[in-house]
Amino acid sequence: MCLSIPSKILEIDQFNNALVDTLGVKRKVNLDLIGEPLKQGDFVLIHVGVAMEKIDEEAALLSIKTYQEIVDKMQNGEIETHEGDMGLNELYR
Image (cartoon, rainbow, N blue to C red; front, top):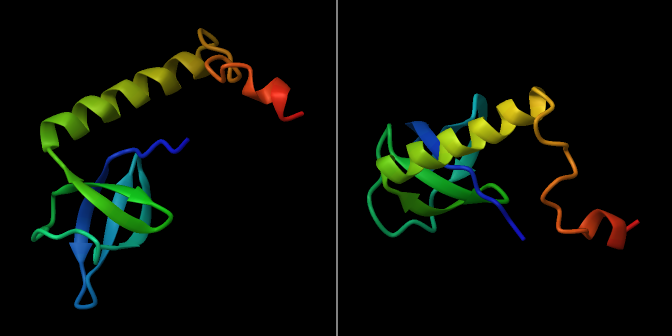
């Protein structure tokens, strides 16, 4: 399973690569698989360094808020880091 956190495009270069921000982490990704024009400020979903889909800003911000709530609860000890793994950690030990 793959979770993709919405990433905000900060800049796009002449080779159709973008610098994006994913929860404060900046990285370069390729935009070639997106069939529509993209611009600074757009949100995309990424898989292994390639933007796979443009995502609506409202949906992106809601998703980011949800991820941040999960991180906050993990940092506060309200959620254990292994919760929600559906027993997969035990299966693959």
